[in-house]
Length: 295
Figure 1 (spheres, rainbow, N blue to C red):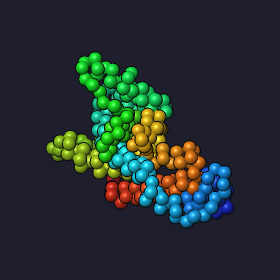
Figure 2: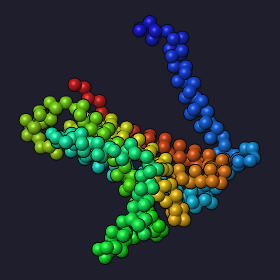
Figure 3: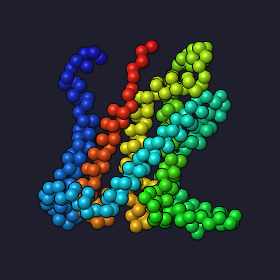
Figure 4: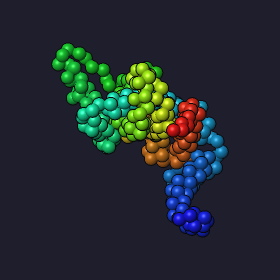
């Protein structure tokens, strides 16, 4: 084995298929995307280089894009805070219960493996003012709001509804990540802390939290990137309406590219989305300091 690891030719042969696939599937499309974002490129015309005109239009003349950017940032912040906190609390709770752990774990994780498209249609049905939750509220004399059609407010009600549905669907993923990390912490550390008189809260604060920081970085990065490129629930519950008030970057990108066939303009939105994901990842790694502990 050591001989193979020293043989550069053998190493190249082993990594060549994966490297070729990585370049063809990821690197080349990203380069093309950057180029097309600098072009006036529609469905039936060849790309025509126009420089930064698409980006100028995005940030100065396109109110729908600015609305989508605001909604995406709100959705990312809301998801990062709620899913991380609730996921961690569920992980701590389920790690410490002696019976029924697997049942509750499966219940909380089940929405993660279900189709987002199907769940979006299901929740859209439940929030329909004529046949959903409002009908149950009407029976007890309460007039329900227009859950998915309200258009007033800095962040409209439908956006809050979608964010809570996403919390319900994806909190199980964060829970599973934190459970895996917490399970790997030696029980001897907790027993020693209890012997020294530490409460469960102090054990959680001074043992659990520092030791799960690597998973915090991973979970938070996945959470934020997934939130920025979120598409399924928004499209199936509101399709960006009413009047584009629930558009996010992914739905705006889809509309420009596949409804209006503005491939150059859609590529510019893709670049903005890619840059946002990279910036958020760097900020998270800088903000959450991971210490190295030696046993």
